[in-house]
Image 1: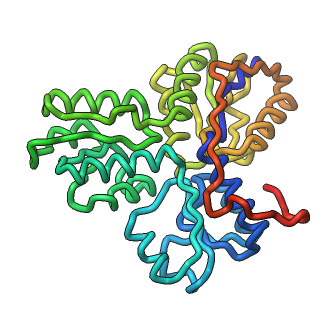
Image 2 (image 1 turned 180 degrees about the vertical axis):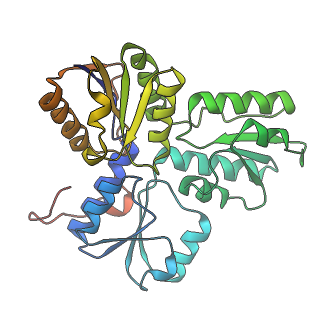
Length: 316
């Protein structure tokens, strides 16, 4: 079996920053540390942090007054920040800067009286956080059919997008919006993040060279789901697995070529575990294909800068 290993894959800069922020917080502050929503959408990462004393919650009211609360990479609404302040919580903001960018855009356009059409998945942590920036001024669309049902409610309209969308899906919806509302504006710079674009581009290019694609990532990871869809859109069989326990070895028998990649919240050790099994079971010859050299780095949350970590602290 010839295995193509896509690069870039796995952790993006925003996920790495958030994971390192929680890791560092546990080392400096100690447990328990409360986290609003999952730190990133990956079951293994969440379970590893739970084992070290992180408590994940969807309710501010569940956090004891005066405790430490870390905001996840997906960001939170102003209402959540206010609730945390009222409970006198010590907050650490690990929101991805690219998500923060969209929050700021929503505030800016809402302040200027724009009707904001947000392209994204209703209920997703990122989407709910951004919608909270301008309650009543942001409408969510997920499909072209949703666009067809939209009515104009303002002379000024703008669209924004969730950072982890499929490029093709977003393009179709934006095209439909522009056809229905020719004067609609968009953000100065594309909202879909560089890592999402790079990973999808790699799958689209490399999937055509293999018989099957394996995407490593959790089922609630939007960008991982999009990678699987990107492969299937090329007519290639693809599966999304959370880890080694979900790998379908039977489906791989007889295949001569496989592509392995990982969503932006999947840790590299899961990728290597799959690669090692492919070597063991199928004598896989692995070729890493680097299509983009990612060098993006985000600074740690300002609340952690200057804090000294104990020398005995654990590292995830």
